[in-house]
Length: 425
Ligand SMILES: [Zn+2]
Image (cartoon, rainbow, N blue to C red; front, side):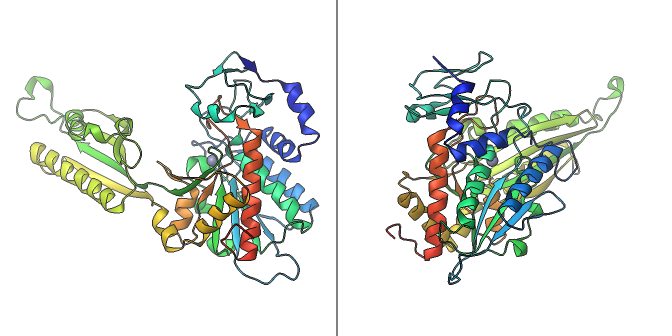
């Protein structure tokens, strides 16, 4: 069993600038807060924002901070560069609400040997929790002390972009016009609505966010949410015969009629699902919250129709007006957009090859900011940061993965500047 070592981490920071940047960033508690209507939802995001603004100003850049806390930095093209395509790069400031981000105490596991990792509080990361660790033998891995998340999602992305910006401003890398965005409240689904595509003014974009080394996310679910409302009729039980209608029983009937083999717990890969996730109510009225997911747009529509039919069945059984469904579109699969505008995916593939990082193209069983941006007209796949087990205390970051994320992003910038989707240049 190996343990995280704080001193080992400290001694490594002197000659690893990218890692140092990352460790500085995780000191900020930027946990997003569902319950807050503030913009951004937590003060920590503004504090980290202020720190980054300072850093960027020292590089003689002129970042702007929107009223929601989003930081947008325009980096003009290398002098003498002939304008080709405009690239936008994004990462998010907030961390997941699922675990504390307060007082993160990172430590380093040196040259991972393949067994379990014991965190300072006694928690253990084993292969059951993190099967991906098997492919990180010999890597140095940053871990937590077991009481907080690490914040690699997405401070690893921020560190990669800050490190990249430093190389861009003194033109060590030839580059076209680049917009770097540090968004807020991604983890609670609010980030892209604070982004104005006219301000971003780019041909395409890439998010640098979460996930295992080598991953390029090119597809997401199509997603719809639904609130199902059941209306009962309350009559005293003593005289209820033939009169009482129980909204809770309607809800039970509804849930039972959903196909069990099409739930998140019974599906994988390409399969979509229905998922009921919240319910409240009494005899008089009950409400059920559910989500519908599918990679295929038509199949999502079929799911929508299935729910509509089910509502009708409840009405047939309990009387018209007993049940209704309110649907809300959540996000769309970015794949359709990326197929129509394949250039950014071609650049990404070439960037992985140029950086010598084996590529795994992945279809995400969820949504990304890129899905929203793509559907609004800014094609936007996602590149890995290398962080593993995000959103909890087992989160960790192999140092090599972080560097590879940087190398791929740098290669992408170079290739876009060349206007060449071939990695051999
Ligand atoms: Zn993320």
